[in-house]
Structure formats: C-alpha cells, structure tokens
Amino acid sequence: MTLSDIIEDLHAVELRLLDYEKRYGLHSEDFYALYSQGLLDDGELEETIDFTRWAGLYEIKQEREEMFRELSRAFVRDLRAKYPENRIRLTPNPDLVTV
Image (cartoon, rainbow, N blue to C red; front, side, top):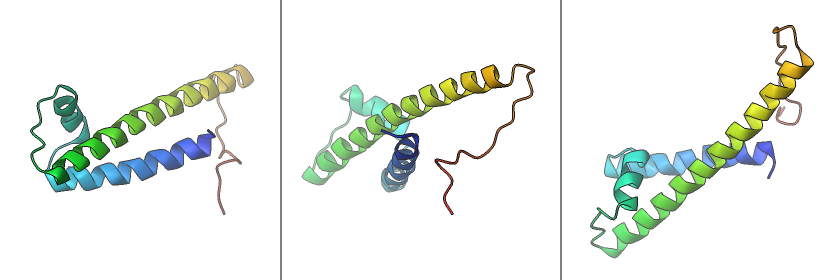
C-alpha cells in the first residue's frame, strides 16, 4: 500500500465515520470502546449492521493511522539524516502532489 493510498483511505474512512457520528451523536472512539466491551444493545437489524460497519471502519482508521505514523517517522528520520544542521527543508512530495 502506497503512502497516497493510505492517506486517501484515511480521508474516505473519516468521512464515513463522520456519518455514523452524526447519526448516533457519539464520537467513534467512544462508540468503539462501548462496542468492544460488548456494552451496546444493537436491538434491530439496522443497528447491528451499522455497529458492525462502524466498528470495522474505526479499526481500518486505526490501522491506516498507524501505517501513516510509521511512514511519517521514517521520513522524518531520513530528513534529519539529509539535513544534519537541524534546518530541515520540507517540500511537497512529488509522489503525492496532484495538479
């Protein structure tokens, strides 16, 4: 998975999570804590489907964020090695810039 794929996935997942947060009035992190502890009564089939999808999206978000953090940290290490005088020149990544 490329850096661009990871970033695009994150933004797409965040938009879908926002829909659930608006629908249920609950932050995804708080929802996931309740869900993972088995504290939610999912009642109707619609809620069961929503909760399963919401939890899956939240897990994808967590995975993609960790992947992005790891790539970002590696990039910072490379920049520090390239610019040892502590003045780092940060320019747009040509692989990510769209016209």
